[in-house]
Amino acid sequence: MRVLVACEYSGVVRDAFIAAGHEAMSCDLLPTDAHGPHYQGDVRDVLDYPWDLMIAHPPCTDIAVSGARHFESKRMDGRQQFGISFVKMLSKADIPRIAIENPVGILSSLWRKPDQVIQPWQYGHPEAKATCLWLTNLPPLQPTEVLSIPSRGYWDNQTPSGQNKLGPSADRWKVRSATYQGIANAMADQWGAQ
Image (cartoon, rainbow, N blue to C red; front, side, top):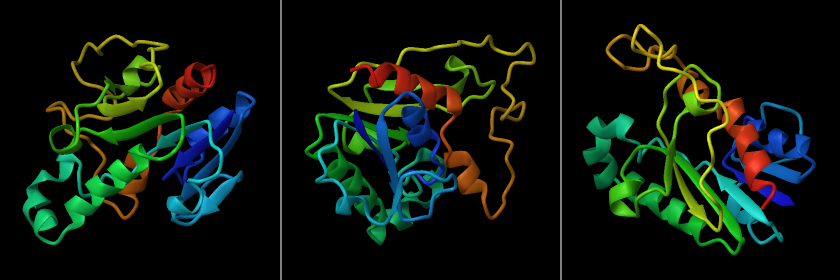
């Protein structure tokens, strides 16, 4: 299967598909963090290749609910509309199977409800991070290793009040946007068999 992993610099999803025997390439404006097939540039440059599957991780900065306090300024200067338009463009690509991944945000109300919401703890990671999936010609991703809620009531990446405990830093956005390995493996195993 020929797989495009759009808007991915980490190589996590790309490498999971390669390990499962597929031809996969990541694409991002940033260079890849892991050696492997990667196109550094605009994803629109490579959308016309005969891909069988695209998994897209469009930028969430202007459309995720975590930045809701800045929504008004993002609407006024067009950043939010650009983000939504970019997602819609990806969803209309001439690729038979498409998964678009993004955190909880305004796509649910300004585009359409997600087909599925997954959590890292359903795939063997002791963390919580609701992740929405919009699917075209793909089945919902099935959990592979569901962990029990910790006795203290919150996950490893949370404060007791449920907030993300990763403090401000120059690379916080990068750390928060990486795909969990268990989720990447599930995508490769389950969607790679389609």
